[in-house]
Image (cartoon, rainbow, N blue to C red; front, side):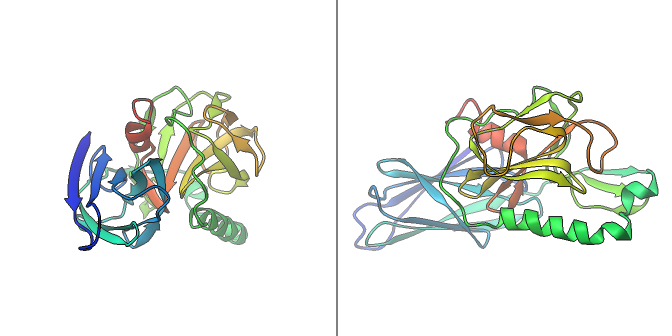
Length: 281
């Protein structure tokens, strides 16, 4: 676990400095960073901006706020400032995230060509579903809905690494934006935390899919289900059964694919469990 602390002064009239700390599994692409901001008075606005995106902050006490900053898997190594504006009169602070290089493995597979290149007849559907997902990831952040720690959706360990680059029949595919769990078909899939269901349906690539909006720009996508047990608009709690493990969509066998987005950034679900799992509130 990586913990770093910075104290930065705001304007000359600020009654107290803003204190910023960051907790993360590591500072690499695909990681989730929990930013803690101390100093602002209760009820005062706190604005956070990182990686050219606004990041919603939430109150964690009388004088403490938190924000979930995702480091997308395509972020290059370097120093990235996180800007914080808080209080009245406003104070401004900058916290530098120094992102280290991360090497993702590459796998080369030879499979049936029909698995690699979708038929032309499906192009409109694929484009429509891509817009649907993009609209969810970029929707205005709602109120925080999760309470308590995030939990594993299935008991089995992940067997496919986040960020893996796949080359099928010599053709490069998008990086693996989630974690796969080799669970038996029919295994109940549980909501990682509270939220409301924004997508529940059959998608071309991910098959039977449930997307849960946990609030503040944080989403879980649970894919390749054999059955869906929730409806769009339904509110679920942590551990609620949302479906069953299956092999629907573009897959070669039954498993659960769990993907997480934080303010549109693709992050490793195992990183989420490390920093916001059972050992952390």
